[in-house]
Image 1 (cartoon, rainbow, N blue to C red):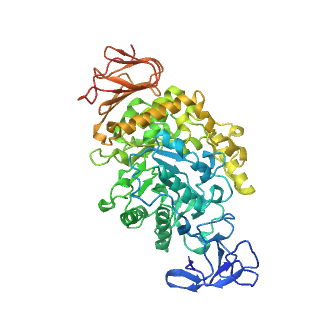
Image 2: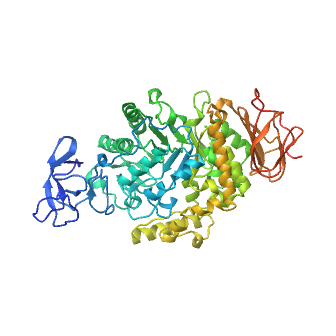
Image 3: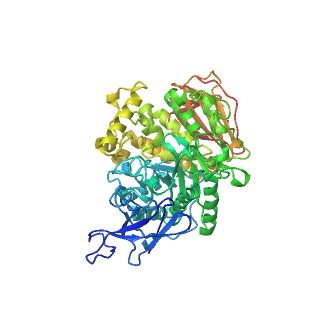
Length: 610
């Protein structure tokens, strides 16, 4: 087997292998002895190689630079003893797939379900998560999005502090477990999206700087020195990232990648990393004969993110649309602090549902400056934007991890679900949302004692500055914080959770059955709002989707919403009565009505309260 590592500044590199009883390298990790050092040969571009014929799948190894301590491989596929231990050779070709590498799954317009493997089930592994896939399929999910699986220090955590980006975290089962999980999803007709983090690495177990210029002081991010995308040595660092992305598509057959916080990828080169990744992903998709999707999380509100590289865009297939979430969350909860300051009215939500970005060049009060660029409904399709009422970020980054179902009554949560799941966008759910899970989802870590104390103290100090009682903020290092966040699947069959689950299931069934509700032409979306002055957290709106109208009442009481004559309710969360000029919704909630054939678009607005 040929071992290769990039270490451009090293004068010498040794491959360090466990030795057998005869003192020669062995691939049997169960027979430890003093390690043996195999000198690597220097090659072009700072690459070093060593050929060890007896090595293969299961061989443990390290690299030693200039005679120093052994370090794990920057491209390690397997870290069975943790991020400070040896790397282990993983042969992805050993796995025998149940399902063929068939034409694949198109993620645009699908229903995405965001999953954190460590809290999705009590077992916290990919294998135990696979045991719940039938419930997701029955719900109407099309794509399972996994929060990051890259190896990080400790056993439990969110996954956004990975340091061995090629390895699958040992606590969730390691690399072959991911192959089994993808196989199980594909067998059920589910696509798999993997969340990947290229904008920073975690604070513990990151040995990359010992090997080469993986970071640069020319740019800084919230996590410190930026990943080197445009400084000396950047070509190989970019290669390290792009190769990582392509490997998930080939060795593990994932269908999509969600790229974390791409606005923190500091790149002043002539060709942005995302454009390079987009073009190489497109080439791979053509070779494999199946669609491959790249979804960006971006804070800049710029449709260039999803525009083709041939026209100067970054070429992402889709991007998250936080302004839709903020508009909906602020309206449903009444919260207008922090980055919700410019949101919270039905007019703002109507703008987001038809234009995607609320901040499209005007002033962002939270940022204190103009922000964003407008979407062009004639060029930008709705499915290019992923929308949601909740995400791991919006739940877990609260002080105590409250879900929307804790912050708002069921009628308003049901209304939020109706808006998202009948929208012209690609809808996404956060695990447990569909039954208004009673568990929070909190921030938790498993760091060494000193670093863990610093993280715990920092989190409490941060929230205390915003008015929280520091003692009420869960300690991320306490194992009970993770345990409190584990879904309780038995809730699904119990009131009131069973009613919410039935509502989500019915909405998704209707979306799947009706082309009008899957149409992503933003020019065809119209919204009628309450004719009275907007009040934060109050109002009503009607979203017109071809032959369907989605009536959403958030007035806090009964309201009459306009409908076309002859319209028939097909789904209702609240009691509704037909009255002259409209439909009277008795409480907050939502009703979906079907218009008579041949009608579409807004109808004259009647009175908001009978």
